[in-house]
Length: 195
Length: 395
Image (tube, rainbow over all chains, first blue to last red; front, side, top):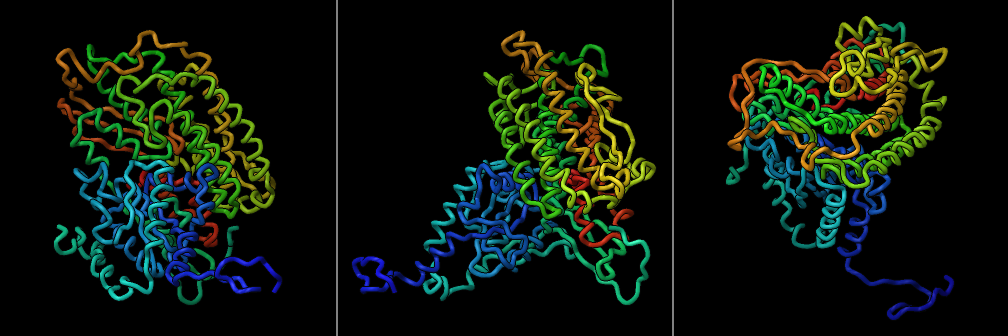
């Protein structure tokens, strides 16, 4: 191999960087957060605008994927109704681990303007999915969405594939029971203690 | 392309298209029965975004419902505001003495912003449709142009998407300083960019060939299924509420109403997917014309400092005024066609009932007739060309 200049800690003629496995994996993950193209309502338009030429999430390595199998990140953009909740949960289950969830906008956070009077809107998708980042707004500005994604990257950087999370992977599953609704009943079942 | 003759042999496969599908523009679910690549039946399944907006209207006072009309059709929130406010103003005007006096400048601002919103809505429609057909670049052009409209909206009313700008009795705020020049600059940019856009995709022979003759709707079908707006006009029915039943100041502006005419050439048919696409491209330019006329004819500044802000909401005791008993149906021409608000009042501060009639719902109802016989990939063309917005269907 040609001489590429030597740095401290490098052996002659080789390029070496010493790092932890987790840091190395996270470096790759945080720079390629492919998101699921999942837009239910108004926030979906702002999600589109964020992917557009002015805000351009591509430069963050964020590319929309139409299928959950290829996505790392689920951006819950818009209102989740009782009928939609089980489908959103199914999509989340189809994503490969490690997977992240960003709740975009007031509706996905807590029901938004529909929380008080609507009979059909779920007051916050965090009852069923482990949400990593909440972005307030109705709808949030694209800058807010990008800010939320940067916050998520911090979180991804702290992820330990070989560490604590791996020893106790059940936590996520138990914190996110599948919603039972649609044909089986009108109200989705809430997990214990979350009312 | 339409497959003219085929026989169903063997088993049919049920294919769920949606509720999560990139081309359904939201959460519409189509249950397709397919024989190979050919769709045998199509059954839309609704309600994935039913947010009970009509019911919420019964709990809120009249002005409080305006933000919810934003969310009925978020791609053209300004037009939805306009429809609802016109309905309530008509209700108030049904009894002598309680009419609302809307300032002249506010009337101009209303149609100015309604037309700007029509431009931005059609830009999403044509851009997303091109993306559904596999052409990603036109989508970026549309979205990039839409950002300029959003800038104007944001400076005037503070929001990029859900405006709550048109209020009962007027508008929420006057134009920001320097807005006229910005809007005129946008008009120039829009016309220039639309030439590029048309060269890029509308005149593209691949795109034309892909859509020519796909899912043509006859004029009789369009009327009997209640199609409205560009979908209706693409089928050759010359009907536009702005011209035929003018509301606001639309009677004072000049514009053409484009009608479908088999634009795709030899293989094209009146009312096919390409016609619906082209009509929206033409309407963008017609809206630019209206915007220019608004700016020319608008009184240069507000007559009074707080003139554009409507005078209806508060009476002498700072109480919300009550509309009289009665009911009213008011319809306007939205980008997705006729949107009607049926408001029933029992004389209290809250509406007794609000019913919203939307263009997307009727456009969706024709799928069941239109889709059988098409290939699966043409279903995407059908959904995109009708410019469905799902909360308008589910409300």
